[in-house]
Structures are given as structure tokens and as C-alpha cells.
Image (cartoon, rainbow, N blue to C red):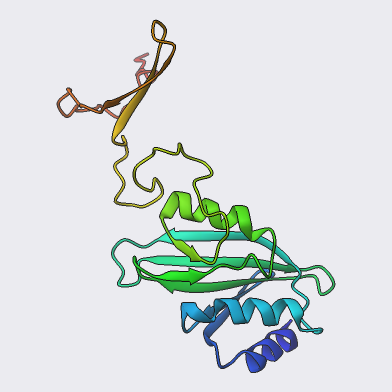
Length: 188
């Protein structure tokens, strides 16, 4: 494993800030988010690496950090029985190159990241919402998105369609007693 890691580091040292190993995952942190397309090409097409499967694209919202989003590409090499995670940090306004031309599985994964976090993928041929409604405002997995949302949706039986209403919270803050109601103290 360490030989494998040293070879990857030497080959990609121009693009990497640091690397780590956790269980069977090799995690590489990229210097710039613009390099993700090049590094994905190298890892897929190089005869020694052969990371042919894009397993997932995961995004993390770090609200307090200068670079708000962490984008993680998880790749699998079946022939070498290894997984690698490419990590890059993005600002709120960054645009990242789409990886559809490298991995066809990136189509739905990038659409999901766009729908939930609002990260725009340049040259994606079908970048539209995939999990939320087309008229939905905002990005639900961002940490600044309100937990209740902005609208309440209900089905009207008389009109036979969905009605969108602005959400109004009428209740004052409740004080909860966090002791379980099922817990009783028995005195013998």
C-alpha cells in the first residue's frame, strides 16, 4: 500500500497539497479546484492506476470556512483493489469543470450536488434539478438553508392540485423537558 501511495504522490505531486490513508482509502487534497479534470483523466487513463469507476461525488458545506465547500470524488480501481478520494475546496462562486466526458456516472452525481448545494458544473449538458421540485428556491443541504423551508405544500381536494403557501410559524418557542415520559421513578 505504501509503495502504491508513494508512486501516486510522485506522479501527481504537481497537483497535490497533502495525502492521507484511512483504512483502504487513499485521500488526496488538490491545490486548485481547476485541476480536478486533469487528475481524474490521469487516474482513469494511466495504465498503472486504472481508476475506472466513479463511485460517488460527495459535497460538504463548511459554513464558517473561507472556502465554503469541500468536493470529494471517490474513485475505485477494480484491477488494483484500491479506492481513492480526491478532495478539493471551493468558494461559493466557484465553477468547476464537469467530469461527464471522463465518467458517464458523473451525470446524475453532479446534478445531485447542483440540486442540493448549488455548485455549478461547467460544460454539463443537462444540469437541472434532480431531487427537488422545479420551482424550488434555495439549496436544501446548505447549512444556511432554514430547517422549515420557505413554503408549505399541501394538496387541495376541491381544486385537485398542489397549493404552495408561505410558511408562517405561529408558535412561540417551546420549552421541553428532556426527561423521557416513559421513565417513572418507583419507590419501593
